[in-house]
Length: 326
Ligand SMILES: C[S@@+](CC[C@H](N)C(=O)[O-])C[C@H]1O[C@@H](n2cnc3c(N)ncnc32)[C@H](O)[C@@H]1O
Image (cartoon, rainbow, N blue to C red):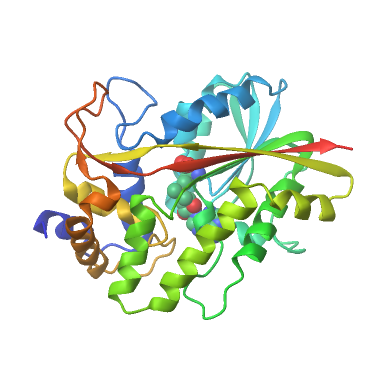
């Protein structure tokens, strides 16, 4: 495999490796279109759906961004909101610091509460976690639901984990508020196939099975909307109204090695300070070389900003859940 890629990731911890894969590559900016990306088309594909929701926000809106990342969403979309308080939850301290900087520089946004920790900290009655005082107009869960179930466990309950997570985010909404969930369709996406390949190579077939089960759970509860029944049962004062759409999105790199690195942004990405395991990149390189067809690896030839870049499939699902009052 390319020595340069190994050298770039050598000696890093998992948080730093994730930043190189996600922020530097998947969110590689388009130098000609500020706030837009060359590294993926997922964001361009979900943007019209998010814009529709942002246009409906009241003055001085309350927004809660879960698994918030480094705040690229500020330039991409939130700068267009008239005025809003942004509440944050994000376990990676490097990224949450970047997000706060972006808020500080913006004229229309102010920081509400911020929690440097996982979404799971909000489950149950953990009094130590700061919660916003006001109910939220909009909650964002953009490409962050990959971290809800520990798929390395012998027994997993992905339905239960997803219900708890969505229920926790939904609980912050005011009547009429909306939860905007976006996730890659990991059954067929490059990063989903890559994660399963990795565990297959490690001879960990139970984890491969777990990953499939987790995808099926998202499909059933979110894409098909069956989580509605659960939300209505635990929030009897509200009616959840769910709509989902699928988009045929892609990821793009200058080289095949960039696509290899981006495979770390799915289930193989870890938010902690443990040393990053370089063997992941070796296995992922093998995956890309053996499964070009399955991931649609090709050189982009359409007349789009990514023309000439290496492309592979990363379809996503957008689920919008509105909390209507009864
Ligand atoms: C693919 S990034 C998306 C970031 C941001 N939402 C965006 O779209 O730009 C996934 C984020 O989820 C965070 N994350 C990891 N485990 C998490 C957990 N248990 N709860 C909440 N977020 C988590 C990661 O640190 C990372 O910033």
